[in-house]
Image 1 (cartoon, rainbow, N blue to C red):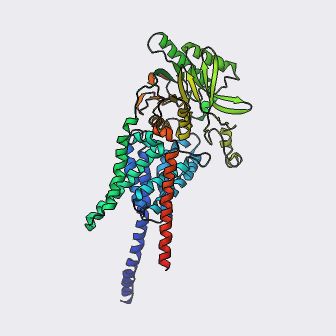
Image 2: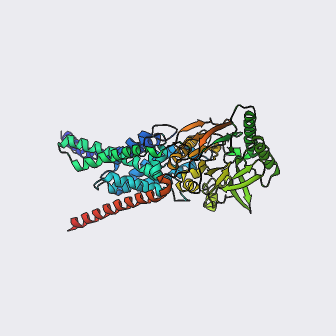
Image 3: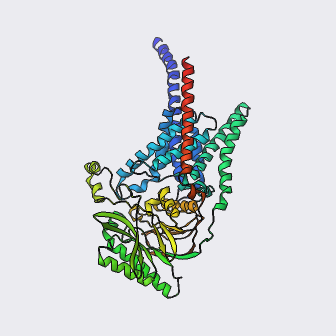
Length: 535
């Protein structure tokens, strides 16, 4: 009987002791799971899917997870959100080189999202917190676009909004303003729901807070509608007929580089096929032709056979061609666009300025070589950077060149428009990444850039997807993947500058200052609260 009584007593005592522990774990696991899943939801909002609106509930859940928590909790929850978002978004980076570089990139990039999470948690106690929190997110994007190794802007919220209602805001203040509007609307959505639930429970309406929440949802939407007149596909300086050539590659993956001559021959062959169709009257004669990045990895300045192939293609079509080449000068490698005239040969060049770390140059080469010599073998010689904007005059039209990876960076695209570009070409080479989502993510960037600067954007790609994009962001033609094709279209030339073009980096600086102000206010409030508690 004594044993039984003791057993019952112990079980009675253990139950209440264990229950709080279980509840504590639940309180920790639910926010953690919600943070990771809301990051995954944000990923699903990105291309190739057209579910742009999912970014709003993603940030609404993220706001719920972070609001009222300590900055330390925000740091961890922000990291989980970053992993949920970036792990699937950037999986293409490991298509040919394995999971190591992919995971390393995500681990590093998610640190920026973790810091944003800490910042959002800190400002979430302030009046009008969705405004401060959205500005903190944009500050995190600004940092991620600049460090380390000159930054990696992939995954900016703006790049998931090419099909969304907020897109016209790109013409107002570029990717920072577009991204800010989306994040603000998401956080505002959570604030509206939170206050509605609170009102139902207590019967008390906090009118000021409710008004702020509603404004955070309404202002971005109204602003996007008000910005629609800035978006136009009308010609201002006449029109030109452009041909974008996709020659295809012998095979996908890194080893397509070993077939450099075949890649050049494919693009020359597709150009000559187009010339035959023009001659037969089946297709309108283009005013100029655009080849993709790496369409001639054989240096045509040093190799007479490569020069002869390009010359033959240019003479067949009878108009200038922008050729993507790999060129060596004074012992340095350049990823170069070459303006090739059918009569004069090469007459102008543009050297890529924003080169890709671990793809076109290898930071920390000796350290990385010590870890894995295969990685250093993939990038045997670093590319050098160009220093000047690239605007080719092609049949009287000013064509700005933004080579592949450069399209992710605000400054590279804007510099071409400021330098007089009436349209933009984004020659790219995505063959390394097989049939992954990378090409669709990059295509969405070009659509956002078209609206941001009100310019036609052509995207000639070695293996697809090549496309013609109007100044309003709409795709009018596109190719398949890993097929030879040529896109020919009459497109508008424009010279007016959007507010985003004129303002440049100023909207981003303003939002970073707003974030700094909110964080300063939050820190100051916390310090005053602790001092009052000590007293």
